[in-house]
Each structure stands twice: as C-alpha cells, then as structure tokens.
Image (cartoon, rainbow, N blue to C red; front, side, top):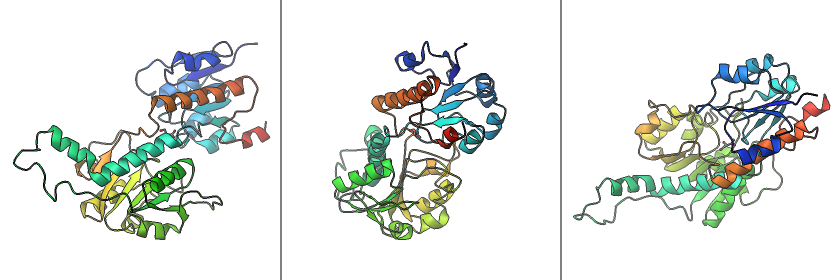
Length: 327
Ligand code: DGY
C-alpha cells in the first residue's frame, strides 16, 4: 500500500517533523515566502493531509477542488484562515494547537498594556535619539503615563488567553471585569459584567475573542466610543475584530489615550494605515505566541494531529469533530 502524502507549508525543524518520517510521503515547502494561493492549490491537490500556518488561506474554492484531502492541521490555535464549514462539508478534519500559547500571548498582551500605559516605546525612542538633554534631565511632567495598579481592566473573551490576562491583572492589583460571548459558569479572576458596563468602566480593555463572521469589526465606532474616555485598547486576538479607522479617529480626538496592537486588518500593516502616524499606539507584528518554547510546542501539536490521522487514531485537537460522525 502506498504511503499517504502529507504536505507541510513551512520548513519546520527536522526534529519536529521526525515523527512523520517513515509513516507518510512527506513534502516540505522550501520557499522563503508564504505560498501564494496557486502554489498552495497545486501543492495540496495531491495530498492526503497538510500542515499549514495561519498565513495559508484555505478557502472554500480551494477545498471544492480537493478530492483526496483528508485533514488540515494548522500550527495555530485560530483557524479563521480556514473555511472550516467547507472542510466539514467535504469531511476534511481540521486540527489546531490549543492549550500551549495562552500564557505566552497573555504575556504579550500585558507587555503592550504596560508599554502603552507608561509610554515605554516613546521613551525608548527619546533616549536613543539623543533627545534626553542635560538642560532638562527630569521634570515633574516628563513622560506622564497612566497607572496600571488600582485601575480597571476589562477582558473581552474569557477563554484560555483572556483568563490568563485576567490573572495577570489581579496580580498587578487591578480590578478585573470580564465578559464572554457565551455564558460561562466558572469564571476565574474576573467579575462577570455586561459588555456595555465593561466598556464604560475599564481603563484598559484587552480583546480575546476569536475572529468569526460574528466578531468582524466587533469593536466598531460605536463600541470604541462607548469605552471610557482616556482608556487604552489592547488587541492580541485577531485583526479585523477592531475597526482600525474608528480606532485611529478615537485616538486622534483623544477619546482613547492609547492602544497596543499585535494584530491588524491587513498583515503586514499597510504603510497607509492611519494608526502609524499616532505615537500613542504601540505596535508588534503578530508575535503573541512568539517564544521559542511555545512555537516548538505549537509545531509539535500540529505534527501530533497529523500523525494521529495517518496512523488511524483520532485527531487529538480537532475543531470539527463532527466529521468523525459521518465517517
Ligand atoms: C494563533 O495560533 O492563532 C496565534 O495567532 C499565533 O500567534
């Protein structure tokens, strides 16, 4: 019997891929840039499974033409780059990597929060650029920021990462409010409130909801303007959840004091983005889970999902387990 063919869209380290060697016919993309849609299409046409990244857009039209594909294992917890409904219709299993990146992403969310509150990137630039001059070494109104301790943190989305951010808020002596789209029974580290109350009372709002058709532009003009005046908005969840034009306006008119943004409507952030001209925005380039250990764990889980399917076991981290019912 011929081996199943598995295609990997990124050069993952050989020690990570080792469990796949010998149990499948493995092909790894060697390009140095993300695959283009035609490249992705032609590379997976013949595959039984693919291991992909969140930059690989697995659209409905791409899946419609796949006869053979049995699974998609993404090295990410978010699967909004995959048309999961289309995959489910075609009985294609979709795997992700939950449980290993929440704490790392929460660290970054908190880093952005502290950076925006205390204007750390601005201050760093000031020192580096030689603007810290001896005729004004210190003054009472020099680089004034906002206190974090004693302030109110609103966590929007109380999944793994939101809960980890709420715990950090508590440790910093904050009052922590939380809201979740679906009802939650066991909420830790946050006081559950309605969304409008959270937005009106929080000095810092950190977003931790998934991007779905229902959460696109969830932070629209109205919701941004219903945030407390002088608040800071942090997004480490997904681009497209925040309406960046409305956010830029709210920052420009001083309704919001700052923002910490790791994810954007378009990635990389377009040079014409209105956010780029605002010095009260702290940026990072979608690096929420970017530590060596966490990325290793994510890659291991993506491979584990693939190995399970190839060896006839159940995919351990499957986002559409209903596929198993129709097999
Ligand atoms: C994910 O896994 O969805 C994250 O965005 C990666 O940082």
